[in-house]
Length: 140
Image 1 (cartoon, one colour):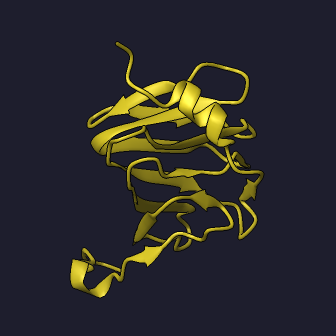
Image 2: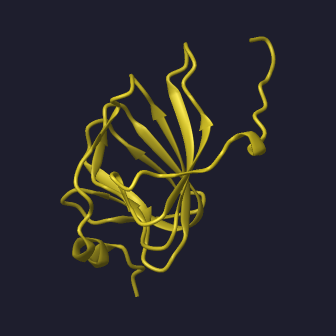
């Protein structure tokens, strides 16, 4: 390739995230897929209020760039961390975590993942509703 490739938004269909790995309504827009020699994928993920991922890990680093609203990322056994537009969260390989919107708020982020094949993400159980409600609220 010797030129810039532009993929118009109208040619990237939005899809619903699979209910087996997410709670609530979550929409995904693929922005970039790995094309050798690159291993990076980028996905715009939009979470409706209360929506979130299941607990999961990645074999490689994940970078979340918050683009809209208020959300959260939480590592298992640690307090959740609020994410707002412009915030960037780096998740190291192998760390059990979840991310999504906080109660009552829409949230979107771009997820960048360096993939090493189709099994880069290990999906686990959903975040329990009681556990989510303990951490996914704005302080004060």
